[in-house]
Image 1: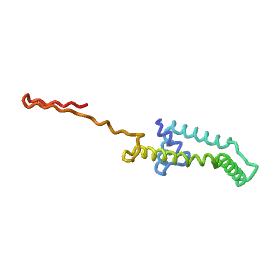
Image 2: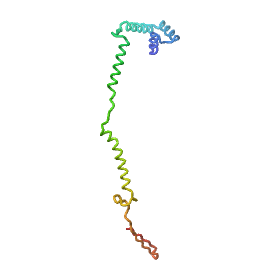
Image 3: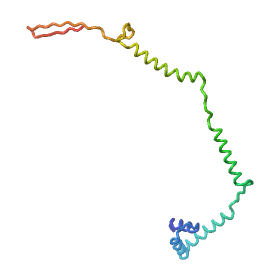
Image 4: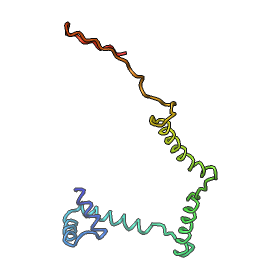
Length: 148
């Protein structure tokens, strides 16, 4: 027997088949002994499980039971949530001093590197003036440039 047929027998037992397919499965069970045996064994298994399933009873009402669970979840979430941190006075001051110090350093570099400012000799990057000598001979057709 095919697996699809077995699954359809189980679906018929659970009442999950459409009416047209249900009639076809009932006709199959009436004609095929293997299908009838599988249907009966599934039906017996279903009844056995339902009859011997343990029944769980709560000592409290449903509302009280679920309210306890809800309170436990809320208290666990409250404990897990981190408390907001407060920064010390030094940390708060440090948060302002670091960017201001960086800004002051950048301003100092640009101030010291300004070549147009008089009296600034700390960062003079202008090259030394070069001297050159030129020799030209029209008779020989030669020009020599000496750069010192």
